[in-house]
Amino acid sequence: NAGVTQTPKFQVLKTGQSMTLQCAQDMNHNSMYWYRQDPGMGLRLIYYSASEGTTDKGEVPNGYNVSRLNKREFSLRLESAAPSQTSVYFCASSEPRQGRYNEQFFGPGTRLTVL
Amino acid sequence: RKEVEQDPGPFNVPEGATVAFNCTYSNSASQSFFWYRQDCRKEPKLLMSVYSSGNEDGRFTAQLNRASQYISLLIRDSKLSDSATYLCVVLSYNTDKLIFGTGTRLQVFP
Image 1 (cartoon, chains in turn blue, orange):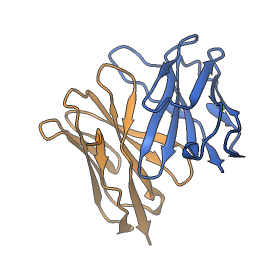
Image 2: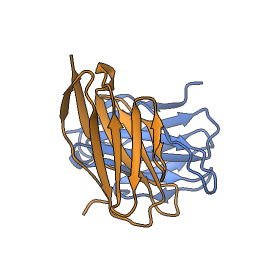
Image 3: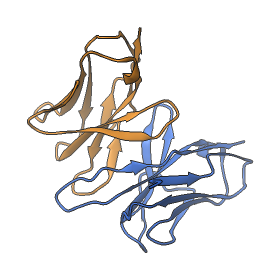
């Protein structure tokens, strides 16, 4: 099992360009998440999807859109990149169970620089 | 005030030392607590959950103090391979959303 995979690993964009970050998991998890990690800020939730066909905003959704294409795939789109979106982006998945926490598994991350 | 606060460190300790990290959380209704480990330029991975009664996993001991709203992680007999950033994580009340601290960096030297 590959777990959670992300593409690309690195990307450099110019301000105003658009791109889509891809994420896929092979653990049959219902929930998937997108986070960004910035120095001194910790990981912050951008969007999440509790199940196929549903998406919800997290703490920092502005400037991003997401698509839960199917149970395996959850993509993050930057329509018009800004330097403030320079960050490391992590995708994660989990299988929540009522009354009990289930571990979130993270992908290797995408390092994005916006010039 | 941040929901989860940690001392960023770094904590520089020799091999074999015992080191402890604390973390405070602001939402008294929080139910679940965890320590994740993140190696340099890698993804976070679950180290251990933190139970009310305290729990141990080998050289690692986690404690929860609900009255004071803090969580601790104790590492005994530190190894070079323990060098990493340790993230304090709280499960947001009544959801499955995680709230991450900024992490405490540990460097173990020979």
